[in-house]
Image 1: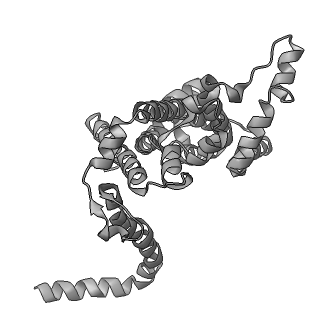
Image 2: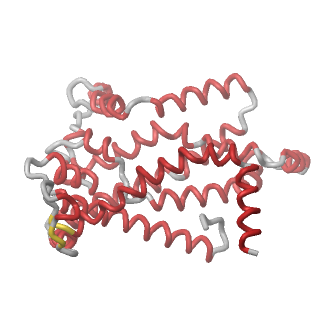
Length: 308
């Protein structure tokens, strides 16, 4: 019986060999660059010394994690990371949906394409360029914002030098950059909604707002919940490059997050502490995994769409 089952399985594999060959390279990529490096995560539990290697370094258990939890930096970076991530999630989640609903009701195709091109374009601009644009716009002497404030008789503000403005500048500049691209998936979901539902609603005298609320929004809600779960899983991942580029000694109080701390301890510091930085990074990943599983379970209990 087992031999027969094995032969049947091999026959199926041979029949679908082209599909299996297509899957081979992506599978190898995931195994080699995603799973194999997980073995080196044990650096977080060792006193890692480069000359001794991973397996030769002394095992210290949770010493590096305890060191992080007891450090003066722990609560500061946790507050900044969670605050920035939650701000980004709350501000960034509804706007792509609203934009997609608005674009869906534009009747003029030429106008719609122009609008889409304009709002999609910032997504393809480098993060370095975006940060440069933001810094130039907010410059207290020559920035357009400062010039406009002077025109209205207001005193210019050093936005990038004030820690209180950092999170808002980071979040809203990111929203402007990625808003158009983020709504593409919702537009695709809206195109799958049965047009007969809209035709019936028009016959009944429903307005565009009523059609969007009662037809379009429920139609894309399962997708929105899936994306919300995925975004919650990445809540500890604030976007290292942009934070580091916008960081300066004046706003470091509110801009230091886990990712930048790991970079400074593990790479930027002359006395690089790989074990300590790996422990901090592993802690962040574990928290992200716990949040992902928790939100997914909550969605299942509420009988909504879930990842598994």
